[in-house]
Length: 199
Image (cartoon, rainbow, N blue to C red):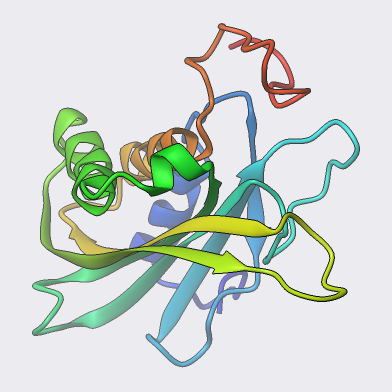
C-alpha cells in the first residue's frame, strides 16, 4: 500500500528513513513491489551487486548476489513481532567452492547480520531467521558452470523506531559481505567491474 495518501504518518516516516540509508557503492538499491497480504501496510527495496552492463534493479536476479528488504507495518501491532514495524530480509549470493565448503559458513553469515545490527546501536527485538548453504551440479545441456554454490539468508526483526536507515545499512553490509565486495573505496582487480565507483 506504499504511495497511498491514507498512509499513517509513522509508516511514511519509516519509508523516508529507509530511502536515506547509505550502501556500498557496488550495490544498487531501489523500490520494488511489496507483498500485499502480510500486513496492512508494506514497502520493499530490492538490491543487487551492480554490474557495468545494467543499471536495473530487478526483484529477482541471476547475478552474483541480490536481496530484498521488506517493511511491514501494523498499527495494532502483532504479538509475535513485539512491536508495529517488522523488517524482513532475504539475501542470496553465489559462492566459490572454497567458501561453500566451510562448515562454519551458516554461523559466520548469521553473525554478519547480528553484528551489523548491533554495531549500529539501533534497538531491535524478535530477531530470527535461517541461513542455508547449497551446492548443485549441472548435467546435460544446462548452461552455467558444472557446479554452483549458493548462500541464502532469511531473517526478520522488529525495529524499535521508524528511523530505519541504519537497518537498511546493516542489510546492505550483509549483502556486501555475501557478495565478497571489497571495502568501499578499495578496488579488487580480481573481480571484474564489480565496483561502480568509490564512496
